[in-house]
Length: 316
Image (cartoon, rainbow, N blue to C red; front, side, top):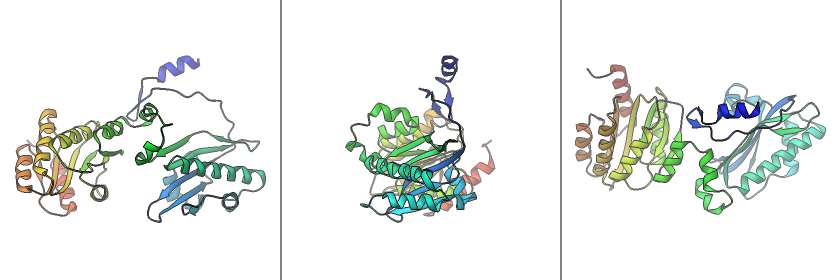
């Protein structure tokens, strides 16, 4: 029966991921589900340790709907999370006795894994408490900082490839940063800050399908590969390109964008706000391919143009 069930899952697509392996584990008797996590607080320049009295669900949902169920400790590097701090956190969350100590031990261990792995986030969700108060890590996530991978030869590339989104994996090969999201508006930006701002503006009225920033220079080849990359995602309704080139030859990048749009015969609205060196030439190239050009410096204007194009529907 296990073989039949496994065979039925292998090769299936789940939320855009291809099932390449199946984990088979012992069924656990669940008395209670908890959440434990360690993550980077970039604003505070610190590490945040989180203990949640509700597990098995999205922690962001809990933070919005039941903030009283999450308990936090801030640790400023190079300090470590000490045992007494972890026990105090577990006690604050309402745990006592042996269970409090066990949870504290998990927190300390997870913190050590987080630091040793150069991680951005390490979490166990849910951390199951059984009727005899044993703890089981039923599901876990460890996201390692890409910039630190060279320090971890113990993490083979093929292992990372198995856990990454296929488009994110392709983005790394190109040399751009891509994060897949659940929306239907693709976004290309020429910097991380510009990309985050674009997502915020678009997210006020539409749903971003991704975060993508090109990093360094803008070339025809890079923009060709980048545009083709974001268009791999099914179900898109629009594309917003937000470039600030400075002295980069954005007119060359425009040629790469146009090549992809013509090859794939993109039918949905494409809006571009491209400012910088030889911007007028860039606009002319993009317009010839049917791209809606926004010359305003405000990203809000580009979002307005995209919303208007979507509301207008397909051109007759």
